[in-house]
Length: 339
Image 1 (spheres, rainbow, N blue to C red):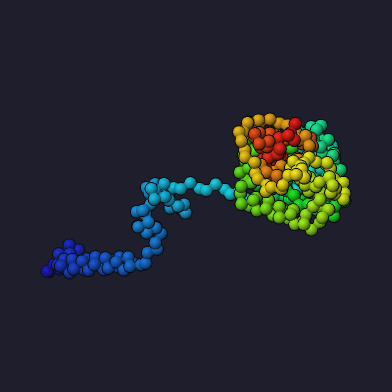
Image 2 (image 1 turned 135 degrees about the vertical axis):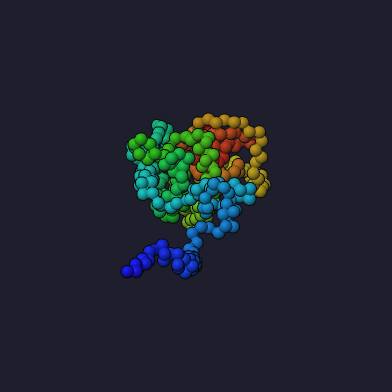
């Protein structure tokens, strides 16, 4: 009997190797084609354009900061010390208490909110209260002080005088730091650095505008009320003995030398400074006297120093004037009216 031949896997691979090779090549081509189609999907751009990356300094992240032409980052501008109106309720309450104490001559209450109050200060406050009826329409304008949590406060108010119908607009500057027991008002003399700080603030446009507004309203009030004008004129030494004011006012010194009938009126001229002598001493006003912006009786009045008020004499001049600091404001008074 004839034996049948058995076909093995080896025989199949041998007989059909050419066809098997062709199939493998086709499969490889199909796989590459499929991968190529997947690569056609759109890409999401997650990195900045190459041009930006090339211009970015090495090691520096892309930020909103501006860079100078030399590649250095410009320093950030200092925060602006804005003038804010009535934004601190604690300061407003303190100012109201201060103004009420001054108007009433209440030195006992005043001692609880200021740092120092001498016997001379107390006497001056009591004398001043004799012709002040009240302070009305009080507004507090603040700027940051030189120390942490301290403020320079510009207080605008209308001062109602006894027996005078129209109030006199005025402005006052106070320094209010924070102490161990809370905020208080610095009433004593200030040092030179504080004077310089306040003087710099007063040059800010917003503070200048505030002072200009008060001066304008102050002048308008005098023009509208003869009695108020006469009172102010007497303080300024402009009412002669032959023309007394209708109502009595506190006695003040005359800044302007009296003219004799033989003298012809002359145009007011600002005196030359002459040689300055450094004083830097603490003294007091010997009489109620105006503190002027310049060394001239025609200059704007920035404050009134009352008899006994503490005042710092910074410099004295040969022309009879002195540069002073009065409650944080730098101005000029006649030297003869300082103790």
